[in-house]
Amino acid sequence: MSFKQNCLQTTSSDIELWIAFKNGDKKSFSELFRRYYSLLFRYGSKLCQDPDLLEDCIQELFLELWQSRSTTQVQSVKAYLLRALKYKIFKLNRNEKARQMSEISDEMAFELSPENFLINKQEDKQKLVIIIEAIQQLPNRQREIVYLKLYHGLSYDELSEVMQINYQAARNLFYQAIKSLRNILVNGQL
Image (spheres, rainbow, N blue to C red):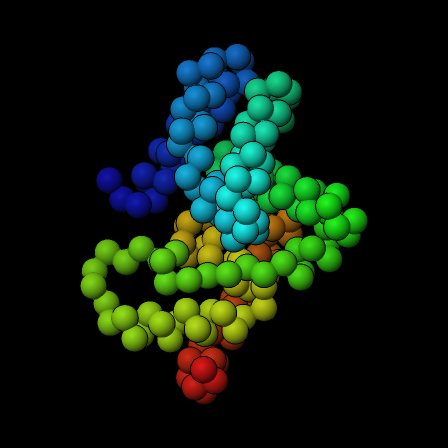
């Protein structure tokens, strides 16, 4: 089975779980929680440095989902949950700091470290360090889109939903991030 077919199959099974959960199926809800908890925690840890607070946000997110079970149509469960968690964390930060969400998203550090990248084959650690250092030089939004696209494999539709930008803006932002990375690496700005 190809990667694309596997992604499509996962997406359809996610949608089936989502529909069953919306119809009150507790097992489907539990499966969604089990399936996405670690992804949400890894992503949320880039936005919130307090693991206890992050865990509370994830649990609150799922509690609210269960309680509301609205008729919201989702095309990607993964993107919907990532965006909902991001909003929840930003809302929490906004309430604590009394800032607007846009200020928080632009100023919030989005850190990447070598541990974030799971590499199937042993590669030269020096090259990895250079790439991570180059990524750290990118603006926050570009770091975020690189992380979501390359590490989590989100599609441009999912990226646009998570980052709350349109499809073309997601493509342009990712293209700009890659172009900036290339310039940093080629010009040796490390």
